[in-house]
Image (cartoon, rainbow, N blue to C red; front, top):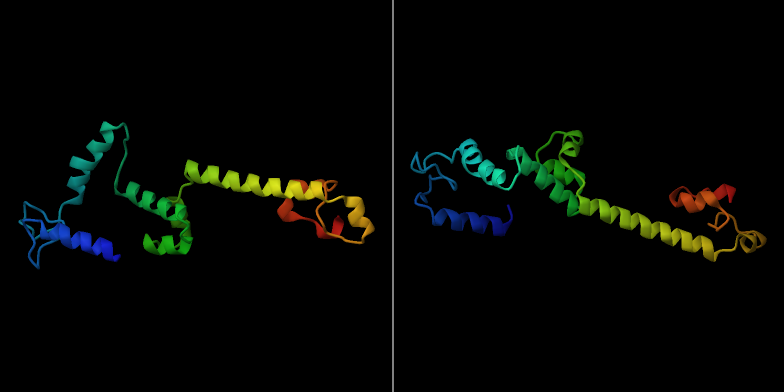
Length: 159
């Protein structure tokens, strides 16, 4: 557990009416801290109504799991780390949780476009006739349509 999270939970419990050693961090007031808070009741009485007020329906605890998984992916965490964090048995289940956000799609498109523009610039700078006369093979050129359209699949043996 991250130290800041631990400190926050200890602080939270210290401010509770039920802060004894046997009491829960999120205690049930009805059971005087000896049982945990009823999460189904919290969802139905607090969380879902709050989301409904802003026009979002269908929120459940798995909504938060999906959000955490997606946020971890956005932060660049490896899929195996996300799988373990969400306690999934395999990546197939984890992949169902991960969703590409509009920001990540824009970032991917920008990265792709930047790379493509770089490949096109290289193709324009190299004169295929001078490359051929020098006996150099496998260099991207402006005359090579496949290299320009599909730079990662550059066909070295055929240019």
